[in-house]
Amino acid sequence: MPSTREYLLAFLADLGIETSTVDHEPVFTVAESSALHAEIPGGHTKNLFLKDKKGRLFLVVLLHDAEVDLKTIHQKIGAQGRVSFGKADLLMETLGVEPGSVTPFALINDRDARRVTPVLDEAMMREPLLNYHPLRNDATTAISNEDLLKFVRACGHDPLVIAVSHSAS
Image (cartoon, rainbow, N blue to C red; front, side):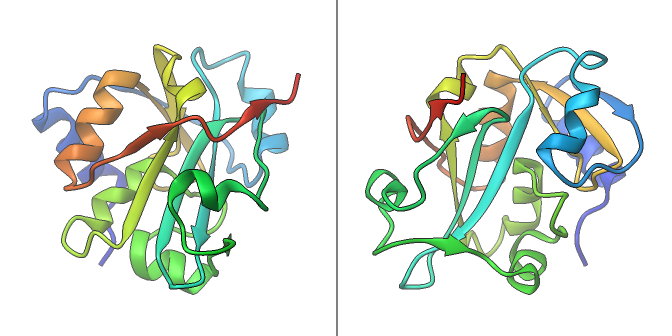
């Protein structure tokens, strides 16, 4: 059974991580979430659930306006051959979330198997405060960049913090 928002927030609190959460209407895309940017301070993000030719899984987390070359990202993240987007059933099986709710917080559901490699874009990690869905797309939770790393490691993952994007602006 995937973790709930309540379990996630309690897990973060047990780690001594302070967060703030804003409830809002469900948003399914970066474009839909842009209206929230003025209301919620910090870096707004997008998440790519990717699979390589050998079946290895990656969660690439970037700023909302970052651009990624999907034809060459495999070289940067250590994937075997080109990557494609992971299907919804695989996303649910490994991270316990639905499309539109992908978030690094979903790594809480991959603590035992550790099938997913988290890739945190360097540019995003320069933002002191970052925003992600708390497992569902009807809220946004703010966390510091350092506490994000603490959370990912507490889930048993060793995140790759590398430059994978370039800005759209």
